[in-house]
Each structure stands twice: as structure tokens, then as C-alpha cells.
Image 1 (cartoon, rainbow, N blue to C red):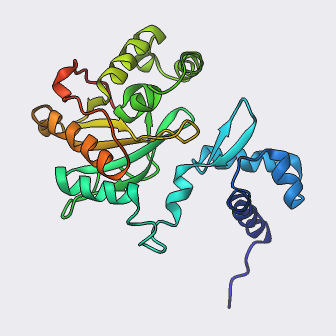
Image 2: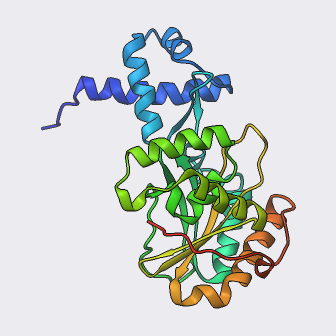
Length: 265
């Protein structure tokens, strides 16, 4: 006997898909009222639905403009469809090439709330189970991708974010804004961020983007014992792959700037 479907669950799923289809058809940011009016949703439930999609990493919210738009994670959902257009596009082919080049895990992360959320992971051929999982979140102030993502924020926005993160963090994870600002200036100067903890090390660079684009951190993840002796190679591999597939990036050697390990979570 066939199991009947819950109408409430069907309606919820329908609304999620309609929200994503709204952005696909309009191809612009939208407000709660834009979407509520388009589909005849109650404003309160529309606001709750959009907030849920932001928390899950599928939408991005502009607090000042009170608008929403799909995140880079949404763009990855259909990457397996029409592989000549998507799977072999710039970002994914870059990751495949880089994983083969350095023999390490490659990931892309974006900022979601107070974390750097991983939305795509590529492993080199023959690799075992990865220590990094899609959907995993890392603390912004204590990981290489988090530091890279914070490095492109305005000082006033960063100060507010640090205050919020400190308020919600345990004492050992709290960071003084002044100290973090110095570290992020080093990240901007070097063009990359590094972190090391629990036997795993990371080095991250920001992908080139337009001003309105979502900041994305491209990261190599390796065991700590492989890291220090190969850091310059990893940085040059990141820069070379990005330059070939996306655009020109800073090509200074890693050794030209001080290196500081940052605690990863």
C-alpha cells in the first residue's frame, strides 16, 4: 500500500523551490514582499522561510538593503547536469586540476552567518575519506578560509561581526578586534591565509570577483607534516590555477611575507 504524502511537507518543499525559481526568472535580488506578492504567501511565513534558507547557506541576505539572493551553493546544485557547461566550467575544472597537481583535498568556502561554510570539496584520485565535508562550517576568526573571507570586509562591518562572534564564543575563541585587524592586514599583504590544528593544515586564497559577487575562499587541505616544507609550492599552485582558469592574481612568492599559523576548527 502506497504511503500518502504529508500535504504540509509538500507545500513547504514547493515554496522552497518557488523561491529559487523566483530568483532564476527575475535574476536580481528580491525582498520578502517581492516574493510574498509574487506567490501570494503570508509575509510572516515568507520571512521565516527566507531566513531558514539563509541559515542553510542557500540564500545570502543584505541586511542594509533587506534583500536576498541565491548563494554560490545554489549554483553548485546542478553542476552535474550538462557537464560540458557546468562540471567542466572554470571553478570545478580548476579544483580538479589543483587536486591532481598537489595531491591534496581542495575546497571552496563562503561566509554563512558566523562560519566559513564548505560547499564544494574535490579529492585527488585514490584519496581516502576526506576530513572535510560539504556543508561543514569553520569559525571565521580561526581558520584559513575564514581569515581570507574576513580580509575583504570593511573595517566597520568587521568590527560589528567580531563583537557578535565574541559574544557567542567561549573565552578561548574570543579575539581582540585590534589583533584580528593586524592579522588580516598580513593576509591582504601576503595574498593568502594559513591555519593549522588537530593534524590538519590549510592555505587559502580569495577567488577573483566583481564587487557585487560573493567572496569565495579556495583552499588546499593537507596533513600538518606536509605543510611547512611545501607551503610555497601550495601557494604558487593556488595562484597558478586561479590565473589560468579565472584571471590574474598576485604572484609574489610565499616566502616574501611573514607566515603566521592560525588555529583552524
